[in-house]
Amino acid sequence: MEQLIGRIEEQKILGRVIKSGGAELVAVYGRRRVGKTYLIRAYYKSNLVFEFTGVHEANMDIQLQNFTIALQQAMKSPVPMAVPQNWLLAFHYLDQYLSSLPKNKPAVLFF
Image (cartoon, rainbow, N blue to C red; front, side):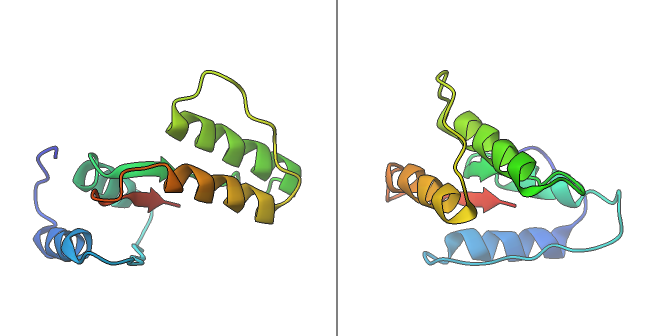
């Protein structure tokens, strides 16, 4: 983990979540440009298995293409993936990828 300065309470929460042994949902919110993304990336660096950021005001086709690129990067696949036709299929692909990961290591998905 990169050295984080401050954010002691937030780090305690993130630490409890990763050690819980179960599925967890963490919502991080606050003003823009205060380091929310940096906090998550730095704290969960070794456990981050998928990261996706939507494209502002883009249509579904662009969002699905963007999701596919993020999934391909997470899988470290040099072969381009087919873009799914809908979100149900997109999350099915994500589920297949997650099923291939080691079960004994926490996995963090960052949306």
